Image (cartoon, rainbow, N blue to C red; front, top):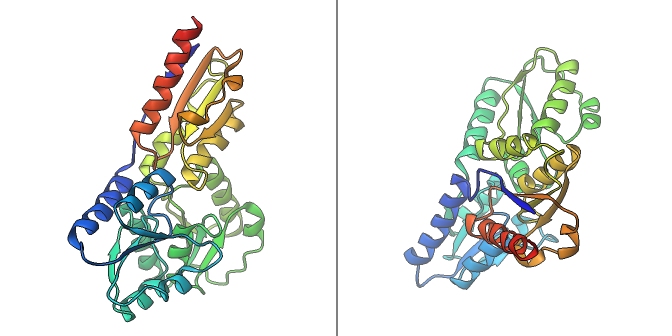
Length: 294
């Protein structure tokens, strides 16, 4: 069995910066309670490591982040995730006298700034994103009336925008293919709309690496990453659409030997919030299995 190591591997820069900021916060405020609203990044292993440092993670899907922030004691430190945060949540945090550490990814910030630019110019915004994803919630909160969220082509058909000035952008971790299909559908309806694809570089290069795989040469692809990581799940989806059997795993312990039966070539890739350590452990384990079966 051949083991193919798909590159790039390891955390993207945004994830590295967010994790460092969280760890630096622990050092900077040794005598304060530190809370993390939601998952800093979509990686349970990293979240557990931060909890072991004393950070209190609150990720209750039954409650809105606005409700959660209201329960944080005054004077505490609150860390907001790399995906961005709803403006109303940030405002309440300030009003409650909380110490804010915003680890927003630079790619998300770039998208936020360009949305603000076009809103100020009088444009309506069509935002291509995933419902209930923290990045989408954060960016659409910039203007609930002039930003229109679409997730698929059907939702494009339901759009009703009278403004002739329309700007289209998107969540940073979407599928290249899905985004292009939705964009073309919007352009059919609003031919004068301006578009900027804001899929981040880390997501783009990982997706392109999967798209470059040959289904005639790769029998199975393991995608290492969290099930809540949108960029991870899109890698699985792209591989399956290419005709490559793809399985998402969190770590090497989740590999099932039965899935490797009659496999000649297995490839390994990972989402942008998966560490190279975890991915390399998967690769090493598969290579050990290969040696044992030779």
